[in-house]
Image (cartoon, rainbow over all chains, first blue to last red; front, top):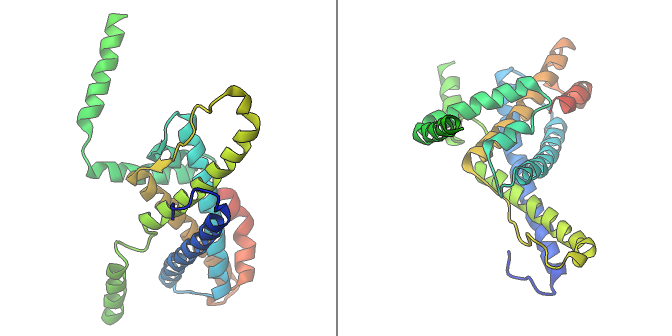
Length: 131
Length: 115
């Protein structure tokens, strides 16, 4: 993938497009699975066109999401995107934001990291005491 | 009925925990898009930053941690399920069993505003 960084920008661009198509196809398959199982839950059928549309929209959403979270991370002076960035990307919809926040709490619950938090807190307290 | 449940359960098992997106897939898509935007940035940077001397942050590959990817998957999953659920409500109101493009059209504006 990242072999050609010399003058063969054309080839790289082509590879890039090919990769994009491949990822898009894999993404579409996931959407089909999710949409069909959701329809089954509602005891409904979905026409193929509808699923294809939803897949396209979801892919566009993914692209937008990627750009958003990258900007948020950069704004915070980070190179790595973290959970808060993704949650922030849903800030227009309070309900969605709470859903995602709960999901992130669930994820965090699986891995204990209370010690680091406590340390940070105590440091803050120290500073407060000093001033 | 039992057989049906078993089939559903096995298919759920087959696709991992419930139906959701694969973190790796989402990560690859993110990386591809970040690569594209950074390439574009470099092109424009050449034009307007040249006077500054060397650019301060030349190659800054953005990465995402595992939690962030999982939440992104959840967000996208919610988008897809919401689309189906809302369209299903319209289809049901019209008395059909199948979700057609017209049903999606009806719910599309609000759906796009909500995500």
